[in-house]
Amino acid sequence: MTRTTTTDRVFDSLRESIVSGEFPPGSLHSIYRLADLLEVSRTPVREAVLRLADIGLVSVERNRGVRIRGVTAADVREVFELRLLLEVPAAAHAAANADASTVAAIVGELDRMREHADADDEVQFTEHDRALHQAVAGAMGNPRLQAEIATLRDSIQSRGASTIRRSRGMVELAGEHAPIVEAIAMRDPAAAAAHMEAHLVRTATLLMEQVAVDGVEVVDPAWSEALRGHLYLPARPTTSEPPTQ
Image 1 (cartoon, one colour):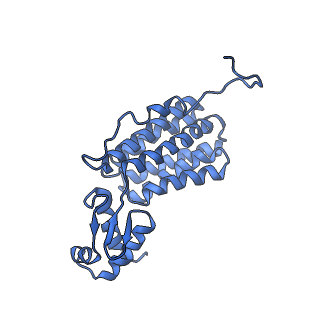
Image 2: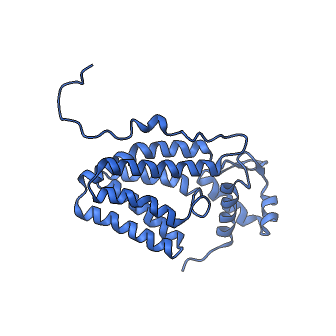
Image 3: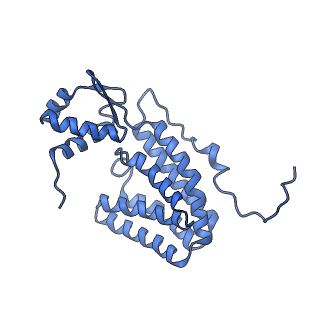
């Protein structure tokens, strides 16, 4: 069993305060004030702050204190623009080319997501959500693609930004994955691409709305429209001829 330390508890509390907007981006806090607020000594606060700095949520300013960086709407948009460019064609490729064992693995991950949603187990649900996306990308047989997608997810999730229990529940989120998996199992690349796009756009929009600073950041509901026509192109005839003008 993993032992939860005071530093762990302080880290979790501060991260939640940052992600929820209680500590807004740009605000400055002293170690002393944070220790008093959390009713702990300064040592676990210092240790937790260093961990928060490692994942980009704060910066430590000498003789001044801790500056909140947070997760901005711009951060979310940039990450999800890249995820759209990678994961939408990856879903189409999986539908067209995944072998039976890969399809079975993808279906199995969705089943596990549903089980853990019913059990209200967010940690295991999130693990299988991640595994499902990795299995879809894995159909291409390109470990670097999987690594890039994992890094993009971590750049947001490791900083505590999540829609679960804030913007939607686990059952609803599992339901968004179902049409992606069904399209892959039915060998329908266009549908797999469309459903992956819809899922990623919804997730990003909800996250941006969560973290946007009132009066400072405005979330454009049509933020993904410029990408829409470039995310997935259906198979074209193989030819060495350039397209006609």
